[in-house]
Image: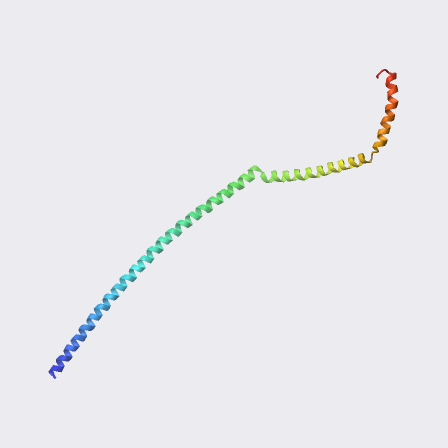
Length: 146
């Protein structure tokens, strides 16, 4: 039995050694995993910090652009107010409307004049001119004009 006990002790000792080595191996793997996870968290933290810096810069530029647009809008409003451009455009519009009305009236007058000219009997007018010339020619000769 002593041999058996010794074998059991040897077997027990080998088993303990094996368990101990496996524990060392697991501890080693846990340390590696911890280091890997820590490095991964560090990389994520650095990436988030860099990203937040870039977002901050973009927001700063966006705010600057909005401020510039606001400033330009105010300047444009001031220029429009000072130049009275709106009033000028309204006056030009009124002038155009009045000119259109005057032109319409003038064209109506031309139409009426053309209607009257069309009503003139040209043959009768020519005949009257001829008759007048016949009367004036002897008078002109009498007074020595021809």
